Length: 508
Image 1 (cartoon, rainbow, N blue to C red):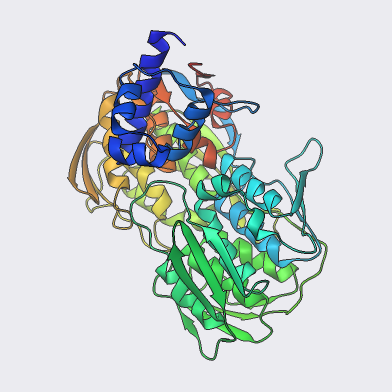
Image 2: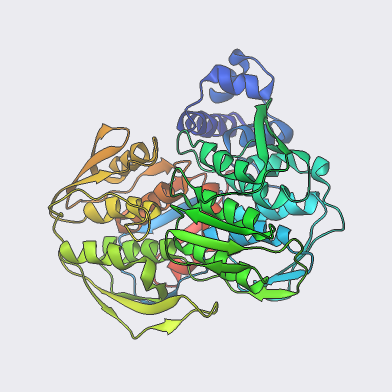
């Protein structure tokens, strides 16, 4: 490996470590080496084996070397181009991961139609395969078949894959009916600050689950307790609601869940549970009533609904490039507050008549964006639980605010780190002032400029930087884009079909 490559790789490792908020000592401890060795690696003065590169990538949740599978490491963007045409919204990432966990409830064959083929799904499939679950993609399709084994082998779980996704925490609800004593690796995923699992644990205690954190694992034991009163969630979270729904699905009694999330992925899970024969009342509200079944053994097919966060991403791409495009299959119920906010900023768009998603429930429209001047909103923009503005759509408002005349405050009260990542827009010309870990002030309009940027280690901010590069004249490079592939399927190719110029490449 040449000195030039070593220095470039060392720089990538240094930037990824800083994005993760790790010191050289902390990375050294994770790798079982010394701080001086990490310093030499980052300075390009240390030869590296493929094994060491893979270990560093796992420690930093970044891809420095790829063997035997496809997927870009970096993106090169020729910006300043207008987009045109129409694009379909893919099915929901967050619904996909919930449904994969819910398949653990079913002894029959589960077929998930038109599933998002993304890295987050791949990690979960690796975990499922390692514990004996049989999965296969049907030929020439995005349809996935899932068949449970006679006995789940949790001790054989692929820990590396499990630690790279936060979804593993949603195994607790289904597995508490299968085991009296089990353990799961600590959950990973995006780096968005401290994300406690206490709401999950306090809710699942109603089903006898008790969890202790021991040396990198959640050690779970299950007692004889069953719900005797309504379960009141301490936060209206999506994943905690899903976990309790899955626990309730295998209990024959009636479970009432209050302060439940009614967000899109929760509704998809409820519709799927109904296909399994579980009774779920109150879908779309904050009070869910579940009447479960001790055994579920049915052959079932289900199609998750379209992803409102991807729809918002594509709308932001149209806005930042000032391009008239049509976004088809938009789940309008989960975009109405966002569109109302954008109308206040002066956005003009057209909506088609409504039609129904393949799940038979979710309302869809086609949305055509009409380019025009935008102004900053009078009030700050902040998220709320559904039916409020979706927390995952908030970063795209930062990008849109950067194109508007005036100053906009973005208040991300949910996550400690994500507002900080929005300051990466300054590298491509944005005027972003960080007020504190939760708030930024954005001044527009922006004269975007090309730059080379390390992709933030959080999904939505990473896409925000990519979309800004589409508007920046010249050649930009976004490095280490694994996090984008966690949540978006073929995003670069699909944007290219609208007229963008994005190419993928690797350094080695």
